[in-house]
Image (tube, rainbow over all chains, first blue to last red; front, side, top):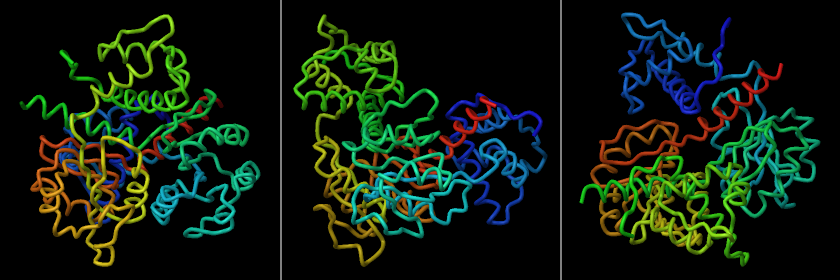
Length: 215
Length: 215
C-alpha cells in the first residue's frame, strides 16, 4: 500500500484485530458484505466507532451493500500483519503456558508459537501439539535458530525477573507478559502486561461502582 | 471513607491493582515506606503518573520517607474492593479455565473462584483445587446458591454465545471474557473482552511499526 498509516491508537489496533476475526467468521458463513452498524452490533459498540476506526486506517470503500468483507479483511491484514510469519516462544510451560500453546495451535494466524521454554527438566524435551519444550538455558540459541522475535511470558511471577536478561540478550522485540510481576525492559522492546488478577479486579471494581450508583 | 471517588479511568484502576500487588510484595520484604519514583520504576512508568493516579483517588500522605506501604495498601483496597468477598464462577474447564482456576487458588484475594462450569459430563463432578465443576445446565441454581456475581468465560469461542442467556438470567454482574467471540450483554453487565489473539496481534503490530520506523 502506498500510505500505511502509523501512530494508530492502541485501542484501535485491538478493535482492528477483533473486526478481522469477526469478518473471517462472516466470510466462512458465506457473507460477502457487512454494514458498519452490523459490525458495530457484533462488537457491542457504535457504528460511529467502527467508521472512525476504519477512517483512521484510510479505509473508505463503503458501498450501498456495506463493506466488502474480503476487501476489508485484506486491508486490515495489510495494516496489522508483518510481511512474513512471526515466530513466537512461550516461556513457562505451567498450566497457563500449556493453555496458550494449545489455544493458538491450528488457528491459521501469521503468529506462530514455534517453541516453549522451561527450567523444569521433566518438561524439557516434551512437546505440546508439535511445539517442543526447550531448556531455558538454551533460550538464546533457540531464539536465533528458530527466528523467534516475540515471547509470551507465562512463568510463575517469582521467575519472571530472571527472564528479562535472556530476553534482552536474545534480541526479542515484543513481550506479552501474563505474569503478575511488572517487568522493566529497555525502551526498544514492546511490552504488554496482562495480569489476570488485574483484569478481574478491574471488572470487580466497575461492578461495585455500578452497584453503588444504583443505591 | 467519607468520599470515595468515582469515575476513575480504566487504566488507573488497572494500575491501582498493580500498585497494590507490588506494595504487598514490598510489605512481605519488610519494607515500610516507598517513594513514588521507586514505585514508578518497579512498574516501568514515570513518578508523575504514579502521583497523578494517587491524587485521582485522593491519596496525598506523601512524607519525607515516601508513602507508608501499609496505609497505601489499605487506601487502594478501600477503593477497589467490595466490602465482602466476591464469588466468581469459571465457565469452560478446558486448558485455559483450568489454568485460571489453579492460578487464582490460594492468592488470598477478595475475589474467589468458588465453582466452575462445563457441559462435558466427564468434567462435571470433578474438582480442581477444591473448586467443583458443575453442569452448565445447573448454572442458574448454582449461581444463586453460591452467591456468584462474576464469571470468567474460558469456553471455546463457538460455545460463548450460548452462555449469554444463562449469564443474564442468573443475574451475573460482571464478565471477564477470554474467548475470541465478542459478546453482547445488556447495559447493566460489566464486560471486559481479553482475547489472547488480540493481545498478541497488538504486540506484533507495535513491534512491526517500530521496526519500520527504524529503517
